[in-house]
Image (tube, rainbow, N blue to C red; front, side):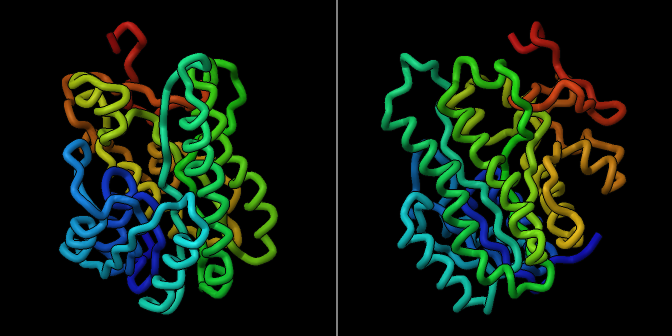
Length: 293
């Protein structure tokens, strides 16, 4: 697998969870990582800040830049990108990981919550990609990666949480359009999504329950898959909607996935948005609905 040594990654929402795991995986190669996230002060409900993330990245072997940044605000994103370029000389990889979630039916969805999800997920992804683009065009193997789902247009993925699904699919629509728009510039644009729930604060605090956390995989599986994505040749590997374990199996040659499981005695809980025709790799068992209760 190609190394990211000396490459610069701009990762939104990288103070914890999947974003931090992606950052630490790149750091193992000796990469530079700009942590663009909101959390600069400790929060009793959420682990980590941009500063603790920077420490973990440094311990993993990378060079970190902690930047307090709310992707809803154009001036903050512009300033964050400028700081990154001033520190590291450019940007090679943009990872749009920041996301807001509220799994509520229409009558329980306040419009301020609707606006938040669209401002962070769809608009934030567009804004960060746009702002990083001039620097990506000068990179040797530039990638934009969205942590967003395949565009599997079935009502079951929308019913009961329409606002969230529209906002999340907005990120994927950016992939669909930008991959074609930026192909002539040699900038790859891809989407990555987990097959199972991932043990993050969102799963713990929003979906809830100790059992579901134990039925989840660690963020490391998404980090390993993301590393593999951005190691591909940008001019030819673009416009893909990837599921983490399928991609690791088919392209990375990974055959053993138990290392990512939190509790090997339980089946894995399925995530939203995974198409029915995307089958798991051999030996991977996903829980039936009756087993999630």
